[in-house]
Length: 248
Image 1 (cartoon, helix red, strand yellow):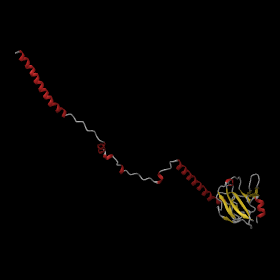
Image 2 (cartoon, one colour; image 1 turned 90 degrees about the vertical axis):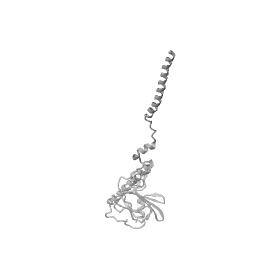
Image 3 (cartoon, helix red, strand yellow; image 1 turned 120 degrees about the vertical axis):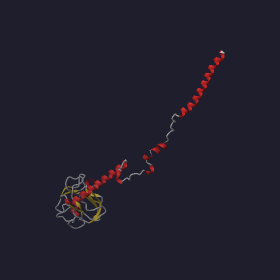
Image 4 (spheres, one colour; image 1 turned 60 degrees about the vertical axis):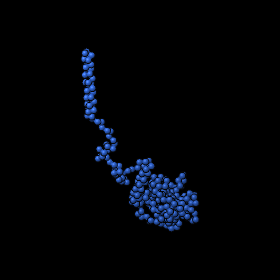
């Protein structure tokens, strides 16, 4: 009797345990089903779709047109070239300005446009307008004929212009002629003219006594004068003596 009583409580415990397990098995899946499911990872395409209104497609982008003047030189070569072009433009403008105003300084009143006289050789300045302050010697290769600024300068002999420039070394503005006089090669140089006053160009043929420029004080000069040089067959001669013998 006592053994039968002891078995009864154990059976009750087993029954309650089985019932509890059954209840738990039913409840747990229900509980699990109510748990919020984890969100699937978001892709780049989905993010792009969300923000599609703010995206710009590369093929739809347009570049603003560039005007020629909207960019500048950046490389050393481009900068150097630009500076050279600007300097050349400045020199051209200065030369044009000088040439435009030089005529107002020419002392042409009372002077002929060709040197008076006759013969193959003429004096390079009008008679009575000059005096010689210095001649050949001591490293000086010509005669300095002092004359007022703007006094006309004439070709001493017919020939071809070998040089004509706004700057020829110490001569400043100068003209050089190649001539043949009495069968001899004669080279004459006319230096220190006024800027912009040259009347002849390289290669031009000139006649004796033709106007070629105007007296000034350019180059290595301290006063208005004509530096006149004469070379015969490659040798330097004293210009005034040559003129006195040959000029008509």
